[in-house]
Length: 508
Image 1 (cartoon, helix red, strand yellow):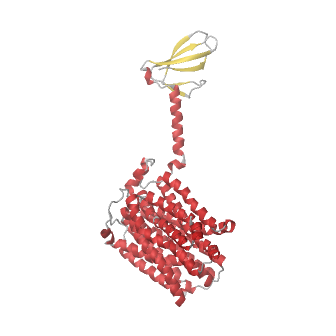
Image 2 (cartoon, rainbow, N blue to C red; image 1 turned 135 degrees about the vertical axis):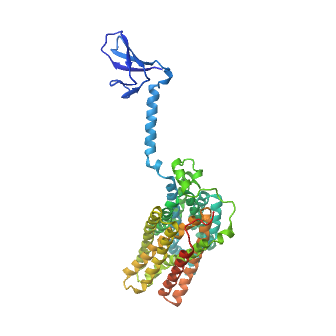
Image 3 (cartoon, rainbow, N blue to C red; image 1 turned 90 degrees about the vertical axis):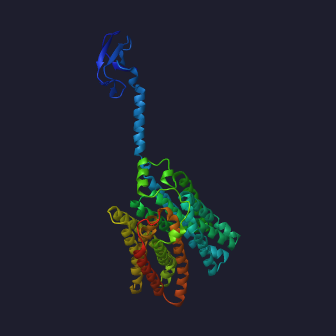
């Protein structure tokens, strides 16, 4: 092939010559790259025009002429190469896809608790408008758990057999629609409102098992604790966001605006989830090969299960350790989060505004400490500490920390110290995200959704019974009695988890 270049010349007109060239010849005044790659034993044929005062150079090779690339091709290839480098250098192109999945799950749980806590604020103007008595308000608040209980195990089965992407996507859309329909249901009548709230519980009930399933396939063991801590902190921050924005929206636009605005956010999340998420890294065509290798060699990523060995699952002591520990953990957690406004008002004599402010503070501390605990746990695992020991250490902190600070409440005299004890209690409670909440994926990665459904069912029952039992205890006793029951269950959970739990896989 031949390439042509214009170079300056001071030779007489109408002359030509052959100039031997090396492989790299410089054309400082030509509109070419600094160096032009030429084949060996090339010559430069210089032809000088009569009128232009410029010289045309024909580059020819004595070898096969097809071996020399066109100048245009060289320029295009270089341009494409630079574009590829620039494209690869963009942070959103090299950001780990597994952490995209984690962030999307975090966002889903943020919406989950935003939609859950908005009723606790909106119920005040709603009850005034519809003349609901306290018994009716309690019925409405509890109707959420009817659906929530129904879909814990069912959601786990569905996620493990179909895939986490479909189930979590369904859950977000379902509860978002139920949230948006809440004002319409309230206007139609109490039965319709109860059904809407129960339907919302159905959607949120599948979220945790589905999330556990999808992360068991995407996140390596060395990153498991901090990924789960981040996702669960989305729930805490969702409560903060819901409690913070609901009063403003109600004041500016009326109570229906809370449900319409919060519910519509689910459609935005779902559109991103459809385009970015996959149930398994093996299903993602855009996943970079090096990340796929990292995931598939360090975590579970097999096909969804076809049959569920219920007898084998329920015969394992670590499974029952999870169920019992989840019950003990949630008894204290639900009591703290449900009854704290009343405690602040009746015992510490805070007004309702101050009570609401101090109710937000523990959620923030829990979000922070959950992520701190996650990083600590993963660091210990990366340094060679066994997963079993790490899980037991973190869960022991998650049990004994709250137990200790609750026992100090009867000894403090100032409201500030009481609030500090409550905040520290819930802050240490969040270390459980790196303990029992991470343990489902450790012992049964293929059935992690089902396992979380089983243990979380026990946890929800603890919340239902614990909330009711607290009212009974307060009617016949004192707050000290309430805290003693919680402390006792925390101690039981500590013993059971340390005796029977493991970080090793017990179910294939």
